[in-house]
Image (cartoon, rainbow, N blue to C red):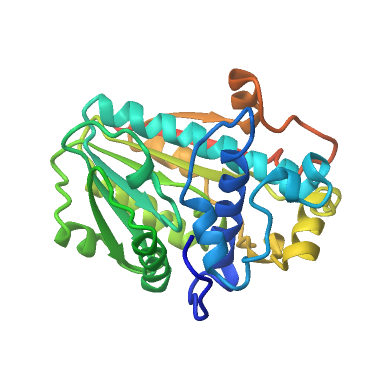
Length: 296
C-alpha cells in the first residue's frame, strides 16, 4: 500500500473527485464474493488521497452495507459499468483494434489489469495533474503494464488530437475508444467537438463506447437517495457537477455520419450478468445509457 500523501491535485476536487469515487467502487467490487471485476490497484488510489483515505473499500466496511444508496447501489453500478466496458474493449482488441484510446481515463487501470492481445497500445488521455497522481500511486506499488501504455496530458474541453497523434496514434489503423464517465460532465459544445474529433481520427472498423444521460431528470429523481447520500457522506454533489445544458444526441449524430449504434440501459447488463442494480422508483440510474458505435 502506498503512503497517504498530501497534494493529490486534480483528484481532490470537482470532477476529479469522482475518479476516486469510482476507484472506491471498483475496490468494493473487487472484494465481493460475486465480483463483476477485479481491480487490485483501485484501493491504492483511494488510500493515497487524503480526501478519500477513510472511505470504505469493502462492502462490509461501508455504512449500511449493500443497503447504502452510495456504497451499495451506486458502487455496484460502477462495478457493472466497468465490467461491460472491459468486455467491449477486449472484444474489439481481439478482433483487431489494437489501438485503445481511453478518453478521460482518470484512475482507470485497464492497461495494467486486462489480458490484452499482443501488439496493443493503450492511450490514456486526461489532465496532467490526474495522470501525475495516478503515476505516483502506480509507481509506488511497482505496477508494470503488460502492453505499451502512452499517457497523454490534455484537457478534453480543448484541442487534444494533436497530442494523441504525436504520441504515435495511427488514424489509418483500427482503434477502439472509450469515454467512460466523461460526457456527463462536459459542456454540450465540448461533447460535439469530441465526437467530431473521434470521427475524424478513426478508420472503418473502429468503434466508440460511451456513457450519457438522456433528457432532463425530474425533481423527484433529483431527490433520489443516491444523490443525497453521495453529497452528505463524501461531499460530492453529482447533480452540481453534471453539465446543465441540453445534451446533444451524439448517437443520432454518429448515425447520421454512417456509424452503426446500439444504446442500452444498465439494467440490460444486470439481467445478462445476473447481478447489478435493479430499477427502482424515481431512479437516479434510469436515464443512464451506454452507447456502442462502430464506423462501418
